Image 1 (cartoon, one colour):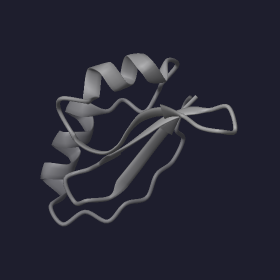
Image 2 (cartoon, one colour; image 1 turned 90 degrees about the vertical axis):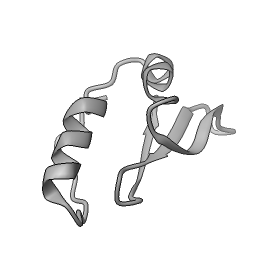
Image 3 (cartoon, rainbow, N blue to C red; image 1 turned 120 degrees about the vertical axis):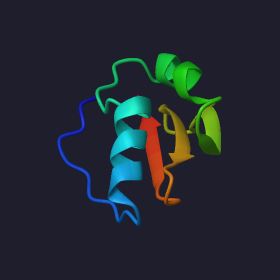
Image 4 (cartoon, rainbow, N blue to C red; image 1 turned 45 degrees about the horizontal axis):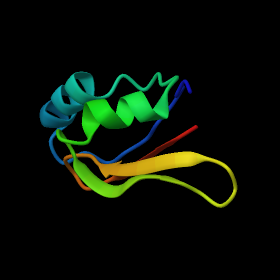
Length: 72
């Protein structure tokens, strides 16, 4: 998955830029590998799971509480 654009509100731009550059690269080929990399470093909203419609996904929160979902 390659994310081309995202728009989020940020209360502290410097903190948000630091968080995104250290935690997320937004280019994901393997959702399971990304989950393993992030699960202990972020606030987990929804742990990784297989959906009834055949995708695998998880959801985390950024420092401002915005939810970010990743799936394959």
